[in-house]
Image 1 (cartoon, rainbow, N blue to C red):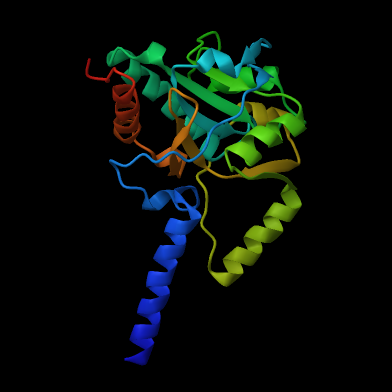
Image 2 (tube, helix red, strand yellow):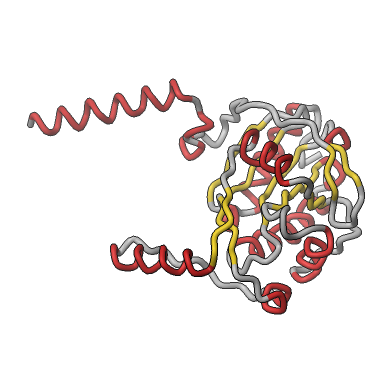
Length: 243
């Protein structure tokens, strides 16, 4: 019985700490109908997949759906790219494609650029000339400032050998969770000896540049889940997906 009360006390304390620490640290606890303000995103000027300079001010007044992608990825990133293609179709059908901006940040800015980003988009069904998805890159320090310092997304370059060793350790402990394997012709041809490990997250930013929703496991987020948030944010701005 004492153990029960001790566990109960720890649980209550954890909940209180969660509230005190803020929703940003516990996005999974957010209620479907509750979209708290989790901080603003910074202004920036970066380079897109066509080599054009793009300012974040161009997204003012739009809801942003933000992903973080590695062009040579053979796991979650291609799945997210496929989802973006599907999502654009839903947005167009709802008549709000021009009110929503798809944005991806390149988490390998030191080794890849517009050429690889453009090829990545084409491989998974996107027309790089379509401005509804801006895939952005820039100086490594600037990408780190935006992605990690503002969006709170971690990413790190690791060698293939060190990644294999880490997987072997996890398998030995019984904690290994295999990732999906998706073909990436560009990665096969480049034959790179490293990977970029990063959070598989999708972030939704409102029309005023405030983070309002984090989704873990971005590759599994359904269009319905995303549209529910988009509808709420556009409704708050005077327009809904149903209008």
